[in-house]
Amino acid sequence: MKNVLKSCILGVAVLVSAASTAHAAYPDKPIRLVVPYPPGSGTDTVARYMALQLEKKLSQTIVVENKTGGNAIIATESVIRSSPDGYTLLWAANGPVTTNAALYKKLSYDPLKDLKPVARIAYSPMGLYVPSSSPYQSVTELFDAGKKEPKSLNYGSGSATYNIATEWLLSLAGVQANAINYRGSAPTVSDVAAGRTDFTTVEYSAALPMVQAGKVRLLAMTSDKRFPAEPDTPTLQELGYKDFFQVAWWGIFAPSNTPDNIVSKLQETSLEIVKEKETAEWLKNNNFSEFPGDADELRKFQESEINRESSLVKKFGIPQL
Image 1: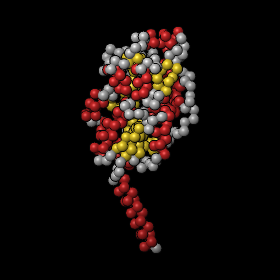
Image 2 (image 1 turned 90 degrees about the vertical axis):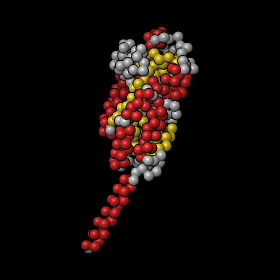
Image 3 (image 1 turned 30 degrees about the vertical axis):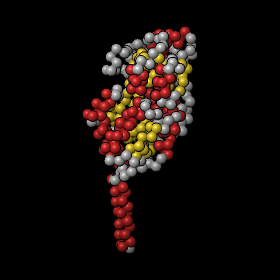
Image 4 (image 1 turned 180 degrees about the vertical axis):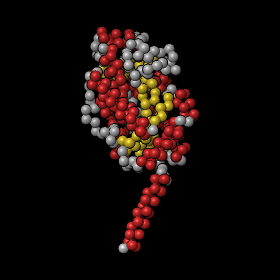
């Protein structure tokens, strides 16, 4: 009996040791970082920078996979359904982990139950843009035109986050406009530059190339204070849209059952990168800002954002999908 008990204890010890070794060896194969938006978007740009830095720290290939469409639901569901082993991660913006919970009556997943937060990384301010050929030289002129002829303005929306932000702003302005939905920021900005839409609210970094090319004009920022790179551009709060504030932020999430020690390793490595001087300089040079937060901070932030955006949807009567 003693021999049997000893064998059982030894067997358990071997299994625990093997599991610990497997987790300690993580990662021992390439990691997929799924991005719900197309190449060229601000979300994609920061994701690819982080992927390169993670490769250096983890000594393993990080494959960035752009999986667009469905307000980021397609990409998010694919990560949720993947094996919870740390080899498939979601590079999330506001949309899939907060905004969708507020915007959809029956979302096919629960962002709080089906995803495990890893780390919060960075953010970008957003701006309100019009085509360079637009007759509107200010936010006031744009919205005055919208008030005179309801539903005469079309705006581009690259995600559910932008849709809620813009509808919130339109409600504050007393304007009705038509939403034209796109798969990400890049096509949204391209169409406003071409004059196919009248305006868009999108992250600053995504629109900057078109601004520099003289194809779109920035009318206002959505942040709570003036953006250092655009000191002469007013915020919407300055223009009378009290309490209006919206930024695009990014973080890393894993399937809900991913082992805690794997998540901890990813968290520690990610935050180490975010807090490095090199990263801060890269973010600043590319018109982003660091926004570090561990898994607990990210979860609390995620919950507060879901509550905030859900309140906005109800308060301003934004149609749910």
